[in-house]
Amino acid sequence: MTFKEVLEEEPLTIPEAKAILEKAVEERKKVNEELAYETRRAIEHVNLFAKLSEEKAEALLKELIDHGIKKKEIAIKIVDLMPMTIDELRAIYAKERFSLTTEELEEILDVVRNHII
Image (cartoon, rainbow, N blue to C red; front, side):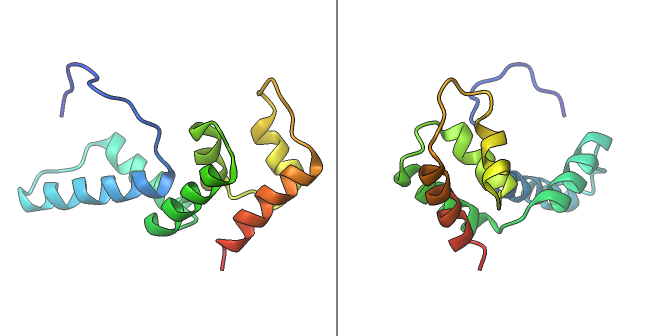
């Protein structure tokens, strides 16, 4: 499968990428087409690192954005990594030009912890 140009670009969570790849695999199975090496590796990656279902990841992403995370990319990274400690969460914010207080970080961690169950 060859692409000529990028029409649209949008960041995805790992569970969203997993769902898209699973649909692509099903389509390829219908036409008896073999998966490319890159596709097989991408499937292995998402199966290994997807920590939530697509629905739970979407709910967590929405709650994080509603909670006040202004950059969608940061909210997606939080969903993908599911940080459990303040240090892990600070690592996600390390490249930003602003810092959050410990209380703000704890609030974000509480939101993440609510979605683990």
